[in-house]
Length: 547
Image (tube, rainbow, N blue to C red; front, top):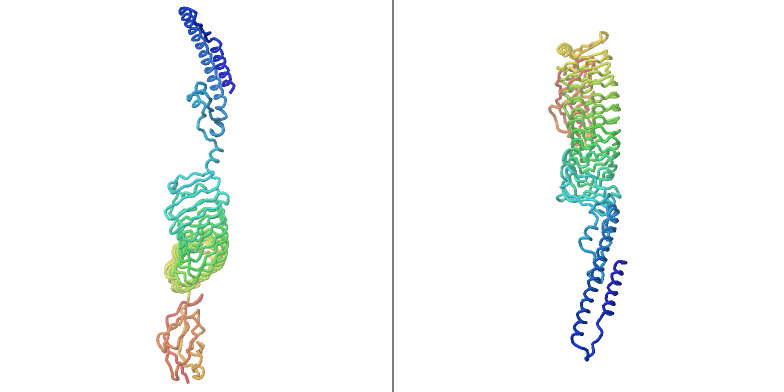
């Protein structure tokens, strides 16, 4: 502004000088030559004054440009540290075009377009992403929210609440080790996962290795949880799986090292490979709807007790492998074999209840069960594979006469094994299975002396007409000697209103059975015990007389 004022003063002085030097009026009586001479002189003086004035203006303009350039250089450094828009003052126009700073000078004064961390943070209050970020998503220092859309699925992350919300309809996409989910860049900030109703499938590796997650909300619309979906989520301590979920995929919650509480609801049908392996689960209630427990589903957990539901159709190898705190297991009927390594390394396992119907015990099934002191192989088992009881602490074992094949080293390193009840044939045909101490005793099973004879039981019509009646087995059968081992009964023929219990032999006469004598044909056998082999089937007929 000072330079502009100086220029105005100089222009005013030049105008005043011009007025002072203007020619004096010429009277009519003077000669023309004098008049012309004076005019020429005056014109020369005016041109001289004008040139001097223009020279001063030019000098002033150059001085002003030099100072403006110096001021621009002085402001260039602070401009790099702050926003260009805040540090640069707009060039003001003057009344005269001759005194304006040239456009080139203004451009030189503008700082380079540089953004520091603070400017980036403030200038991007909202970040939006889509699936194109998959595989290369980098952590964003967002101020409020981030999000994107993948087909019919939307996601948004609220940094303030540390919450990611998945909404929309249908299946979430699958991701992998190399192709990360678009929100993976925020994994150090995500603590809460909210999946809204409408989502039907949680994709593979969706939240894998997002170790800060503490809470997961799964809606009733989800029917399947994909592979590795929450693997390595170390911050997770509890999860509830709704009844709509029928499948929990491979390693879905594997290696969630602090996961202690899991609630499974009716509707779940399959736990895939390693679904909850390497977690801190201490107890689990398996729903009745569960049909399959696949390999290593609960391996290396903190489980203490397991009751497998009755409807189970199969359990994979290593399902409870290396569960060091497991002490008790109850298995139902319904599957035909105990898989390989199922209880391998369960060093505190003391009790295992195995039902009839098992035909095979696979390799390593009870290997290194250091607290397992006694074990009764159920009737019907035909094969025990290699290493099945290797390194266990069994003191006595009874093998039924159905066992024909015993694998190599099945009972190796069983230093406490002192009594073996087995058939002569099974022992001699499988010598590589044994590693017995000289003090161990082998008891070869004897032939079963079971004898059965039918009897006639009487039932009063007045009672059976109104109500179903039960008849003790001793009323319909004479068994001699006292049954060596548990018995099994199978009805072959007879009136439909007369039935017999398979294990107890109790006879049931249903109400409204008419008067008369009814014959019932059955077969009976003994499964044997630690002294006797199983018997052959005995066919017999008893009578029920309604009078």
